[in-house]
Amino acid sequence: MGEIVTFRDQGLGNASYLVDLGDGRGLVLDPSRDPGPYLDAAARRGLRLAYSAETHLHADFVSGSHELAAHGATVLAPAAARLGFPHRGLGDGDQLDLGGLGLRALATPGHTPEHLAFLLTDGAQPLALFSGGSLLVGAVARTDLISPDRTQQLARALWRSLHQRVLTLPDDLGVYPTHGAGSFCSAPTGTAPTTTIAREKATNPLLAAPDEDTFVKLLVGGLGSYPRYFLRLRETNRRGPRIWGATPPPLAPLAPQQVRRLVAGGAELVDARPIAAFAAGHVPGALSIPLRPSFATWLGWLVPDDRPLLVVLEPDQDRGDLVRQARKVGYERLAGELDGGMAAWRSAGLPVARTPLVGLDGAEGRRVLDVRQDAEFAAGHIPGAAHVELGALTDPADLPAGPLAVICGHGERAMTAASLLQRAGRHDVTVVDGGTSAWADAGRRLEPQR
Image (cartoon, rainbow, N blue to C red; front, side):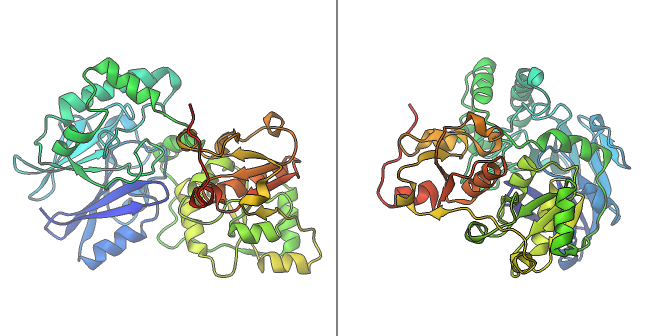
């Protein structure tokens, strides 16, 4: 078997793979939208990308197979996905000759109804399993992304897929999942990107379930919230996303008055600067989402994709990274950035808003609002804190009255929450710099949920 190259998306918690087929050709599995990393890796190895395989219709990122097809790759996908662009549809047991190696499709419904896992073989010898969202490292992928009415049915299908198709494979077989540590498709944090059948049999808590009913109860009972954009990307991937190429157009520079007019006309203004810069001064009504690996997640969770998107950045921030992150969760209407940043906005004499960023002691006398995920809050929070997940922060009227000190793990999500609250008319809001991490580092107690 040739080399397997892993590409990890730290922000979304996913992985994709390039397989050297040994004859000058390459196979990519579950690629993300930007074709550049795969093309570059193939070129360094003298490979032509011959195939791009999809295990399922992804809900958490825009697939790159349509892009790679424009570079000559044949797209392999579940026939049941009914892709709207040229591809080779595969069903259970279909075998593809890759010129010495083989690729066998295994129907593994559960995470999605059409899901396939791909078994790479050398003759009759299994070499690697690309498990998509069926078997993960220490987990399995969630089954509630199709509809609430089908969650239990798909969980039961996943039990059968695992026990009848996946766990019957050799114990020493390497497993290469698509969803990994930190993915909202249900992988635990802090795990290695790959595993083996034997390791999962020995350590995966869901595989320890003695029967189907227990498995379903454990799986469904552990499902948390997920970003809203998950509800639209399956269809985007079915149709075939727009092809941008390896070098999409740069952000257009827009003068302050142009930005002001576009926002008045319904455009969304996202301030991607670090939280200290946003706190010191920002465009009134701007949404703070600092540019970092999880930028795409919170953009997709909080910002509609059907309106022009404007951004504010610092001079040294990576515009290409922001564009790539926005594109991979389906944002096509990137109208541009504020030319000259906040310095230009101030020079134009336009209004500036501020958000107090305080240390731990600055939260005294205010009700603490914790906007981390439910599981984070349950593991340990500041005593007496109110709690609403950032993704559910839609109606300020439901929050405690009076001054609020917003907190998260470090400060970024708290600033996003504060910007949402200020946009909705709450101006008695401060953000705790350093969040619960600083609280714990200072030796203060975090209280677990009882």
